[in-house]
Amino acid sequence: MTTTVEKPARGSVPADSATTSPPPRRRRARGDRTHLLFLLPAVLLFTLCITLPAGMGIFYSFTDSIGFGEFDFVGLNNYQVLFSDPGILHAYGFTIGFALCTVLVVNVVALGLALGLTSAIRARTALRTIFVVPMVVSQIIIAYVFQFIFTDPLPALARTLGLGPLEQSILVNPDLAWISIVLVTAWQATPQAMLIYTAGLMTIPKDLFEASSIDGATPRKQLTTITLPLISGYVLINMIVGFKDFLAAYDVIVGLTDGGPGTATRSITMAIFSGFENGDYAYQMANATIFFLITLTIALVQLRLTRGKARV
Image (cartoon, rainbow, N blue to C red):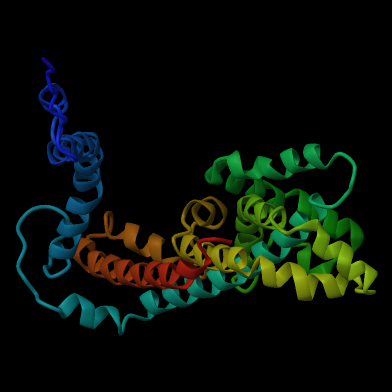
């Protein structure tokens, strides 16, 4: 007498395995809850420290609040006055001009250093370390050090060499003070851009340069036809991110000139912070709202332009 053993149908799951492992949908839901649990502290901190204060600032921009006490709603009055205030318009003009000049200086110097540090030179590792040092030093400390340099040693050296325009500190010259801010900010910001360019240059295959050399291409031709086109994504990122960061410059300006002489080097952020001590809280909150919309627009443009450069 023979016995027959029934085989399980194709696609069926044994009873014991069904009891030991949860269904895929349940596992996915459990994983989602775990991810949300880990995100919760960051979301709470961001909401309490960023979103909530920003919302309150936008709310107060429609009032006449001085930062405490009672207030009345004034609608768009603060915004109407803002666009006709010569001091605010000058601050925007200075900040945008400063950001444009600085981003050009930073990217030209950073690209030059990156090209040099990725070539076959001796002690390039040590030089990379030296050039990165300004990036890790506090901006306010850098500003105070350069304030001393521009106030004493540099004018003394200029008097010794007979350099008339530099015999007086440029920090007290309304027409030249902005140059010191550009130089110091560029000195501190160049290492970060240099690292990004170095990473981009290291992704270029060496075979391209060898083949172009065989064809008779000069180093300048290689730069314009090979290097720059292949690192265009890194150039774009450095330009947009740098411009957005320089718009919010504050520490270096405070340490060097404190917005002076007069209001010659007063930036947007300095104007906004002045509302906390001059009774213009609601007015400067309107200024901060406009500044936020400008930076948000730049960030959206950056995302749009760099979306296709994600694989560079």
